[in-house]
Structure formats: structure tokens, C-alpha cells
Length: 359
Ligand code: DAH
Image 1 (tube, helix red, strand yellow):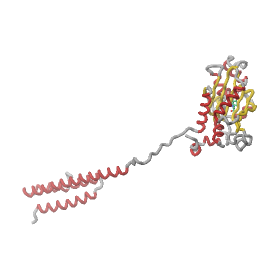
Image 2 (cartoon, helix red, strand yellow):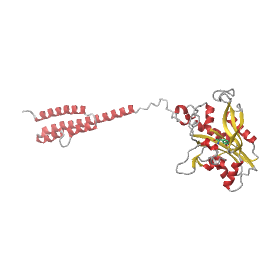
Image 3 (cartoon, rainbow, N blue to C red):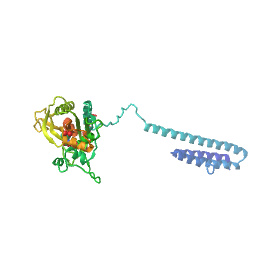
Image 4 (cartoon, rainbow, N blue to C red):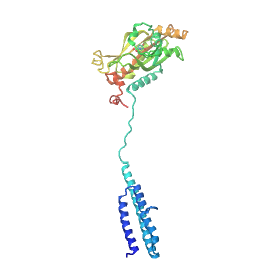
């Protein structure tokens, strides 16, 4: 008959082998826990079961077998702890390798935005006029017939209105999108903090029912208005020439031609020597050597009278004060400066176009 201790030792050996196999197959913390439960679990662990069976042995055999089993139990615990630590260390190493930052790589510069080319031109214009003592005045993009036409000497049915068909605001009778910044002349004179003297520019968006390569339904203008006692056509010419020379450079000649606008008398159209060909004649200036750049003129007395009528008193007495005004398109200036032939490029939001301008 075999010795019970021998038999137990055989079982312990078998359990060790079984444990090593099971441990070798465990891959994660849950796997290790399952192995632990299988061998050391309180209720049905294999080693626990053997420990319980010691009760039936004789005193000496029980002591030896107990020592044997406790050693097995401790070995199993130590092996499990070691395997758990190895797993933790391995996954930490993997994570570190994965998340490694190479601090020697060159940095990735953030993409910086830039001002729109039209914003650049508008701000340039504002700077020039501010340096000449003008004030920058914001008018209103949504305006009405009175400020846009009537007060500017264009009564209903005046043929000049045909050239500036606009958008009306549905549901707001009389509200329209201004067709030109000349509305700013009227708005400023009506709220002038130091009447009758005016020296303003009014830059901003204007709207017309036009859409082709040189006309956009929304575009931008800058209006200028100077009013006071003794302002003359000479002041108009000198101021415009000074402004254009500051903007384009003193090498370009400036030409004044007579023209017509309902709100000025006399009216003039201003041309700049072609900046593409220098005046010799080219495709851009259509062979004339000149580029039309703005409308201008001496403020028509009817405009002062309309403002006085609205104010209810004689504030701008046409016998006492005179003034000049002009208006130009910002897109047109930008197109001339950069040699751009399609106005729609400014409003297409295409970065391939916009990124060609200095930041
Ligand atoms: N308002 C005109 C336009 O939009 C431009 C203009 C012409 C403005 C003559 C003026 C001016 O102030 O005097 O075409």
C-alpha cells in the first residue's frame, strides 16, 4: 500500500505543472485572477482542497504534508505576483514607446490667418485720411430712400436712380440696402456735432443689383465729405491729388474731367495715370493711358437744402458754406494695385487667391 505522503507529493508535483501551464496561458489581470481562484480559491481551489484533506492524516504525515502544501501555496502566490508585475511593466513600456515624444523634431508652426486684401486696402485708405485730419464715420448699411436718393437730389422718378437698382428689405416698407456710401453724407450732416464744418470719410459695404466680372452685388466704397466756409474746387483737386499720391505713389498723374452727379455741381470724374503701363496705353486702360478711379464734385446746394429742411433750421446755408465730396470703390483700388481682373475673386473665399497677399 502506498504511503499517503508519497501520494500527496505526487499530487503536489502534478499541481505545480498544472499551475505553470495555466499561468503560461493567462494574458491579463482577469486571467491571473482565474488561475488564482482555480488553485487557491477558498471554496473550490485545488490547493485548498488538498489542505482540507490533511485532516485525515496521522500527526507526522500531516505536518510534513502541510509544510509541502504551504510551500506550494506560497510559490503559487509569488509566481502570480511576479507575473502580474511583469504584465504591468510590459504594458507601461509599450505605452511609453507608443506615446514617445521626439523633442528634437522641428515644431509645427500654427497656421496664422491674415487680413483680407480688401481690409488691407480699406485700412490703408483710412490711415491716409486720418493723417489728413479726416474723421472715420460709420453710416448704415440698411438705409432708406430718403438718405440714399431723395436728400441727394434724386427725387422719385429721377433717371439717375436707374443706375443704382438695389435690394429692398421685405416686410419693412421703405428699408433698402444702400447703393452707395453717399448716404453717409446726409447721415453725418444731420447729426454733426460741430455744424456746419465736416471733414469725414465713410467707408463701408454697398449693394446693387449687378453681378459680372467687374460688378458684385455687394461691394465696398469710401465716401469723403468736406464742408465749411470757403471750400473750393481747388481744395477738392488738391485733397484728391494728395490722397491718390499717398495711395499709389507721386509718380502717377491725376486728371479731372467734367461729369454729372445729381448731388454735385460741378461734378468731376477723376482719373489716375495707368499704373500698369505708366500711361502709354495697354489692355487694362483700354489704350487710353488713364484709369477711372472716382466720382467727385462740389456739394449741390439742393443737398444742403434737403438737410436744412429735415433739421428744420438753416444749418448749412448754401450762401455761406460750400463743400466737396467724392466716392470710390475699394475693390477697384485693390484690383488696380494688384492687377486683378475679376472682382468675384475677393468674395470666393478661395485660399489659393487670398494667400497670395502678404500677411
Ligand atoms: N455715389 C457715387 C457712386 O456710387 C460716387 C460719387 C460720385 C460719390 C460723386 C460722391 C460724388 O461723393 O461727389 O457711383
